[in-house]
Amino acid sequence: MSRLPLRRDDARPDAQTINALIRRLMEKPADDNRTAEYDRLLALWVEATQGDFERAA
Image 1 (cartoon, rainbow, N blue to C red):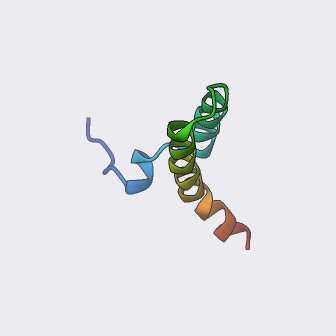
Image 2 (image 1 turned 30 degrees about the vertical axis):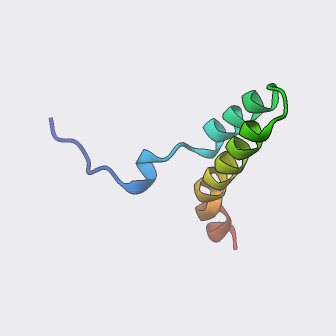
Image 3 (image 1 turned 45 degrees about the vertical axis):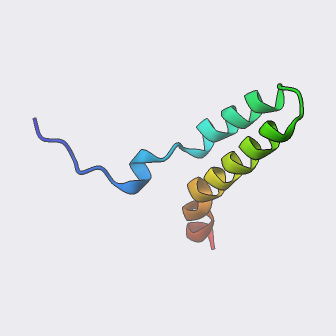
């Protein structure tokens, strides 16, 4: 059985998954590590949703 080629978007988590990760992260005590991880997840969320906003415009 042949597989479709993997696209860059297929390797990235979707916005719903990233939102769940952010919610779980916010349950942890605030510190520099949590802040850095939030920044990283927020950047991933922007990438995951970028196409949504471009299509809506």
